[in-house]
Image 1 (cartoon, rainbow, N blue to C red):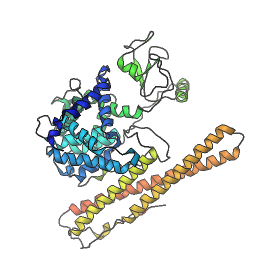
Image 2 (image 1 turned 30 degrees about the vertical axis):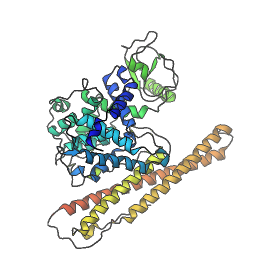
Image 3 (image 1 turned 120 degrees about the vertical axis):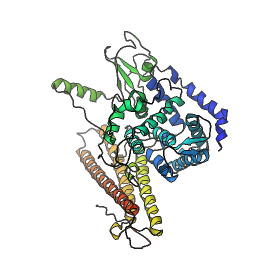
Image 4 (image 1 turned 120 degrees about the horizontal axis):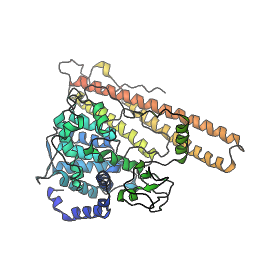
Length: 498
């Protein structure tokens, strides 16, 4: 595809007409209006199916990680990057869910050119591409911000204010692309205002500031974009007191002044009201609905006077250099995956279209592909005459065996969960007291499920140690003057504790 494709007014016009048809401009609040527009674009371009780790790997495959943030990329290389993202996505999806690669690539390419190719030169800054794709893809916000910090910090692990200012300029081009630039305007002094003149901003300071509630006003739409994705399928077992819609989805808003007055997100965003309620009343936003949980919370609150402590849910990272020679911590998540039980779960991730079992398997498979790919790159350096020391001999075959073992355990776990659900349905039919043998079998299955989850967690920790060994090995290869024995192959030594 050539750069004049953005001159194809049919693509641009159709895209804008579909966006305008959603009536997002009627939303009263700029942050929600912006988040809804970007969420629509995200799903239209199928970026909600591509994880942040897949995006980072695509950057490395196309050597964007070796380019300075001020470097520029021509349209042909950008098209190649985009096409590879969708091609790899289709490899992870079942055939019935395959997307149209040419159409999605064309739409994404034209949207990026519209947002960042302001001068019409047919070239886009590398940092613009990284910021746009890392922001609009699937994944947790904390993982995305960790990657952004790795791009704007120095070798000592401290944020460079000029690079962060450039990040703000690039990320605010996203609201501008949906005609929300009057609400979120870039200014040169923004970077200093966000961190209040703090000279040494570490990764923890960076995450605390950008993920605080409320966060920086100019980025208030960013966490909201991720929250929108997490509540799209949340059903509230209530009736909206304005439009009378039952079992509505999305956010729920409860008036703090009117007794037991609930609004669906559409009525609240558009300023609708009924009875004595006024749009000016203070409301509380809810992202879930659980009557039993609310009753329990009220009982606990009535029996104690001590307020709940605010729990810090953000992970803490050591204040050290975040830019090593390879920095694998920004590629593969260091923590175990949150769920192994095969049941559907919802968190801050944007990837909601796939079943948790498939998403779990795909993510584990992607991590092992990353390990194998970096090991292959090390092997190429070894064959070129740069070999590691004998103490770094590791075994790749165990990594493959570990992946197969994890997949087998997950299959067994899913089978157990299906059996548990079957027993629960039987229990509801015959009653708990009438069949004690059924309850005994159910408890045994639950115990087996817990054992499998603990086993999977151990395997995740083992894989993390393997990543650390790989990074240390790569550092050794980068050190000049070390005499290394000549050998043609090397192995990854890795022990799985069963």
